[in-house]
Image (cartoon, rainbow, N blue to C red; front, side, top):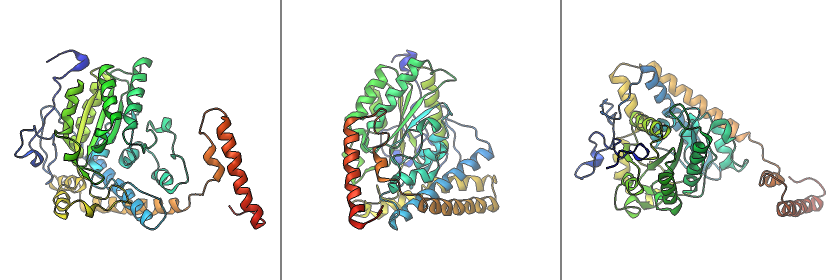
Length: 388
């Protein structure tokens, strides 16, 4: 076992007992808050949170879920082309998202609405992309939150490249920057992800790989993706891996915060497997009832990330009913606002799709733009006026 700081395999990789590990030889999940709302402690991944910080995490979880539910409703009513729900994965996203500093850079998939919330991205900008009225909606440099990535796994290479750039710019250090990249369990079968692991390890890149293992890659269960727990793959590439209770916002915050700290200090990458569950469909075009049983879903409802924080606040008398009612009211206001502003989003000019394709003028793009403009003009001529 090496003690080289650049590849520190002595960093802790286990946690407290969880039913998810019962009857196996696997080390247990890192868990700081049980599904019943009981606080447990861990020697390596503990965290001290003030009552106000816990209440803020609860508020994040509730508001993020409300945005997600509003988006699903909008899609069902024909106002969005598609939506990838995060239902059940709020703790993994909010916990890891709140571990980031302003200087850190995050690379999402297409489901990280909770991380986007933590990076102060307007939820309506997320909806605009799925409504088809913008190319992404936000400037990544303004939020240190990259645009959503639809192609499975490619963002891991982008993140490693960005992290290596941080190294070469001298932006890494105890008070510097690190990179985090999100992907699902299905993406671990992609070559891009494994190539990213190799590059990150060999170049000791300051990157945290955050895998939200929601156990279903569309209709394929986890056992069709791997024969071993996903976090163990990290050891084959030469860096630590850890499995955390993905429905425990405390644990996700603590583990991610420590992994980012290690990256800044030159200890290289870490793979975090957040063991969670996708409560809804893969996207709104999917029907999960065709490939998974209802009893599995019911079992995971008992591990709801929001309810366990609510139980913790109640049991420890850190919040009263007035607080919970106020958060619910705020969620209602947010939902109405998101819906209203989404429906008011203007349709873009059709020719706008050719803007910003390249940083400099490009002959082929210009030719395609002219052809499409002529095509649109044909409709105007036929109708005797503007039709757009």
